[in-house]
Length: 139
Image (cartoon, rainbow, N blue to C red):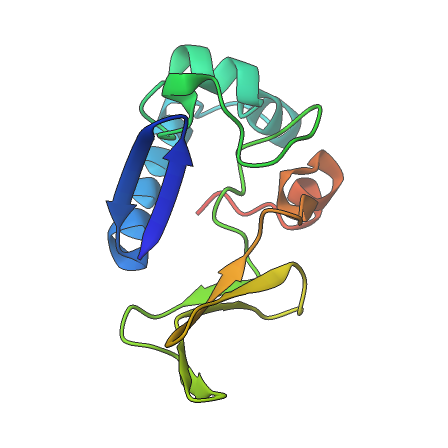
């Protein structure tokens, strides 16, 4: 389960629910940007622009919060290409169900008594323009 905490608001959803909803929102924005080049599309996904023009794209926008404390946060690759998840679990590790992980071993893990989730809060890689352009895929 994904849990966004923003001030006193909490948002609960499964990874799959988040992925499906986010993908549809992303696709709708890309449709609006047809005819734009890579630079224009990536620039459009700047945090400040997205928060203003698409306040429902991310639940954190409502409280003017960011998922990562960084300047020039870009939201194009919110769903990082290295993030893997399975709501039923990926594997068992140390007697805990691994629900999500980073294929590059970046970030850290949030470990509870029975579960392990990927904690991406210290990894800003997918929000950097250079990384986004290297991994750009409009589909």
